[in-house]
Image: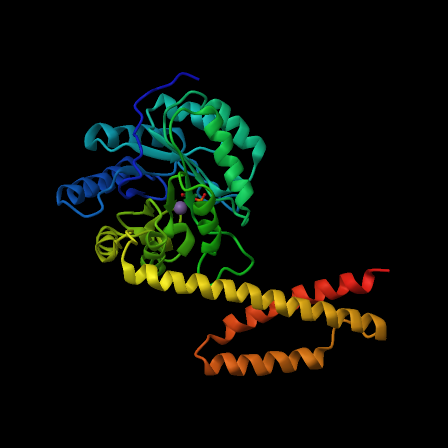
Length: 360
Ligand code: PEP
Ligand code: MN
């Protein structure tokens, strides 16, 4: 595959914004969005649009839905670049897509959530991108599987010369209410802890599914020190051929970006450091208390074994939950939060005691 050059280098120094319609629907539609972005950027916003996004092939849940305009849409995107000079990004899901995009001068690629989870496809696409210096963005797989996500990043990075980033778009759970996809921010925190160098964008559009959730999700992404956003913008979102309820019109886009709070990542203040020291001490105490609790659980397990008593006693556990929840509520803790912690502690206690009962 020839290297078409024209890389758009990615900078971790300032936030990146990739925006545009979910799908390229017509030449007029993409030009209208690009014209708006160009006016918006000229107004000196705090977060200018860096890259114009539009889907050309759409992976749809059900056959018969709008599946994207295909290759003709690449020519419309090439027009956007010629007229408004935005670098272009689109989704590629197979080798043919990559080849067509390179022919039409697409500058950046993203791998969709449904593709990231397929190592065979990822390998083929990565090989097709061999030697390219185009940035490639890997959306998280549908399932909350960090190693699978990182594996896809690693696979692409093995072949391309340009930067490889990750896009957090939420995870498809059985019940993601109120969002379309559950954020599971803890997965992102783990990714950042393990690989602080991987550029990481937040995609509130696909996470929220409804435009009213986008601002809070975008803000959460920035609060976790993500490196930027991917947002869907359409001239008339309600008439969009895909993802109508989550796309922003021009005014909504401007007011969302305007309302974002860019927090200071500098954490050198003595007051903050002081509180963090105390938090560290509290965490240490929590671990010691948990270890003590589990030691008692094991002793109890031994006694249950000797007395041939069953591991689970619902009456006793219900009483513990009732008493501790009351205490926690009195301390201003959230009831659901304390219940989740108790369940987690209880599962571990049962696991330990079952092991003891199984020992001969
Ligand atoms: C998209 O960005 O338009 C898209 C289809 O995203 P995802 O793969 O996250 O569903
Ligand atoms: Mn979309």
